[in-house]
Length: 244
Image 1 (cartoon, rainbow, N blue to C red):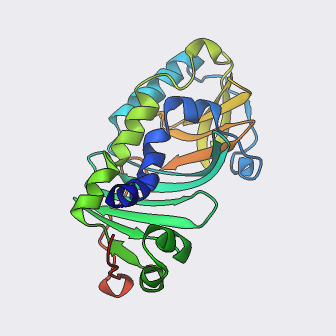
Image 2: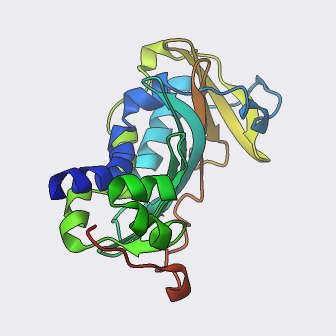
């Protein structure tokens, strides 16, 4: 029973670990969110596609914090993701929704706080526990938290930038100018299981701003190196539930 519960708590953590470079390259692009980028045009003085791509990877690999948000499909599973935190894992806030309600997780140093709906808590524990815990934060006991693995934003960054999310030879050599949420950007495109678009900041820092594809979703990146630390939830937003 304890093993099953620990694995269920680890479900949200598994989202982070599943966001591999392949997932970002092949599973992004959502008509609902495509409007956040502006009209594009060919850039006359932009760096080459290959050099811009490598600069983006280098800046991402060196980043100490980031905020990632979007809707996409991973292996047929619709997913909403909103995660922000630091590379070291001292601070993180996560909201993930597999379609059955949002799961919220706060990480403050070694402590985890979990917030979910009644369906989640009923399945995890009992209907009685759900009445107490639904919509409130529950501190995850150390024994259960151990099953959440290497649960930090740094894991995500390493997965995304450690290897090529798109092979350089798949990039369109033409670099375009565009924008994301008012931020000037360069646009890289590639053919990888459909059209893939990668928006990179044009401010000299080469920050990844957005990645999208034709088939299944989009993710936006912001607050590079500027994510505010997460605090433990207020006491009046917490609950205790037995048998976690």
